[in-house]
Image (cartoon, one colour):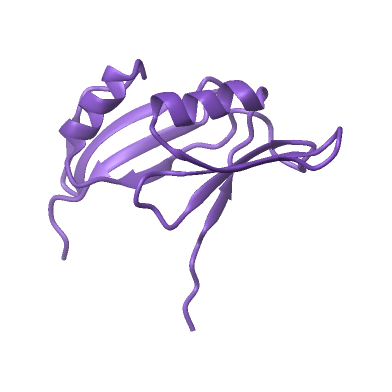
Length: 123
């Protein structure tokens, strides 16, 4: 039996601001944006090439905005990914080297934190 993680909720204070950040600056694809009712809105965004998406929304039972830490995306070339993000105005860390890969880090406007990892050695 396969188990696939396909959706992660990212709590935000302003859905429109977060959607613009993730689509216009980070480059995620907007899959869905549904205003279900006056109280409930669901937005699904997917990183290019990913099988896992993130969900933003209002009226959903979520954690505090900005409370998600350590979301991680694997990329083939962390230098190229960093250049793309900085070119779109995202504040990104310098490349950091670890025995398990090369990383850059950034946060969304609410403070949810992300890592981009280039795996350098698979055992």
